[in-house]
Structure formats: C-alpha cells, structure tokens
Length: 280
Image 1 (cartoon, one colour):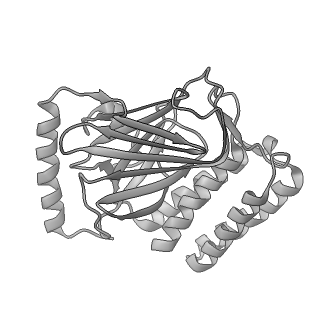
Image 2 (cartoon, one colour):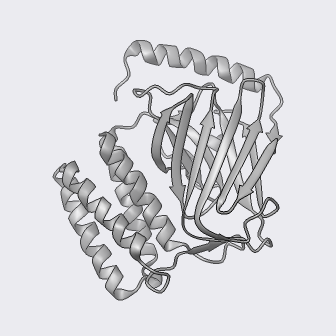
Image 3 (cartoon, helix red, strand yellow):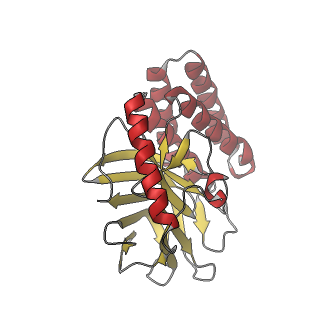
C-alpha cells in the first residue's frame, strides 16, 4: 500500500518526536511484571513506561521442560538510529515504529533442559499504537543478532496485535515495512528455498522430493504473478510438513541450541509467505 506525501510528513514528525524522547531518556531493560506458564503457553506483561506496555504470548505445539525459570524474557526501548538495530534491518524501507520502539527478547536458558517440537506462535499486543490496515507494521525476528526477518501471520486491532511463528528464539520487534508487496513475497520465497537447501541432510529423501516439487511449482506461479495458485501451493506445503514426523524431518529445537528445527523453520517461513500472498 503506497503512502501519500501527507502521511509521510506526518510519520516523519512523529518519528522525530519519538527520537527526541528516546535519546533524552536512559535506555531501560525490563523483565515481566507478570509471567504465567500453562501447559504449552507462556504469557508475560512488560511495562516500559506508563504509555508503553507489551503483552507477550508464546504458544508451543509440544514442549518439554517449560516453566517460568526456563526462559528469560526482557523488553527494552531502542533508539531507532542505533546501528545495533539499523545494521540488522533487511531494507532501507524498514524502520522502527514511532510510538512503539520496543525490542522483545526471548532467551531460553541453555542449561534449563527446555525443548519444543515444530512451530512456536509468538504474539505481541500493545495499546501504545493503534491498528490501521493501510499502515504496514509487521512482526520481525532476529536470531543471534542476525538480520531481522518478517514472520507475520496476523495483524489486527485492539489496539495493535501482531502474531508470527518461529522455529527458534531470540529478538522480536514491530517494524514499519514499506517495501513493495511483490518484493516482500520474493524475499520470503527466497528464505523458504534457502531453508530447504540448507537443511537437506535433515530431511528424508521421499519428503525432500515432495518439497522440491512443491517449491518448483511455487517458483513458477510466483514468476507468472499467479498469486492464487501460489497460495494454494503454499497451503499444500504447510499441510505436508505439518503431517511429517520427526523421522522424516528434524523437528526439535532445544535451549542448548545444538539442534536445527528444520520443520519449524520451514513451516514458519511458509506461514508468513501465506500471509503476504493473502493480503497482496
């Protein structure tokens, strides 16, 4: 969705004001004021200022050793011009959100014995900003201080809610993403392909053949801008991977960070690609 010149001027004014507030205040890192763990779900509330609070929900398909002492959760106000953030952005057309310059970190303790299978759902909710369908705020993640990638699977009102999925953990942030929708789709497809190619040794030959065929068909559909066909193919790949067992594809991530959750990574990247195909 393209912005008008007026919207850009308004955005620039708000960004400048936010930068002034952040640079004039001491950065702070906060831990949850409340934290609950129920079965495969973690819920935390983090308060950074009287105006900026975060409700975080993380839900697992199946977890082991999940308890309040297994995971460190923090949130901090960031300076959007800090190179520790800007150097990790995927594009000059992405930036921190004015009014909600917050980085949430989820760090399972290496010696806690925590592990999960498949995909983890991550949701961030805040009243600090308000959902507007035409404003492309998206949920991004970064692993081990790497480049942020869009993992959005849902955005909605009340006041702003963003959901995504992941096969691993580190930092999460809401970013303004003004890239062209077609460019976002291309980038997400590339990540899916790279994930498959980088983890072939963790996938059985029969499943690998099915995935290769699906990725080939998806590439052809995207090349011809047939987004309806691409969406159908992505849905099918998600079902195939969802039904695959641990003997067919590596599907466990654990806090010692010594296993690659290929299933979770592939599904999460396909799910966010599906989101982008649905809204284009």
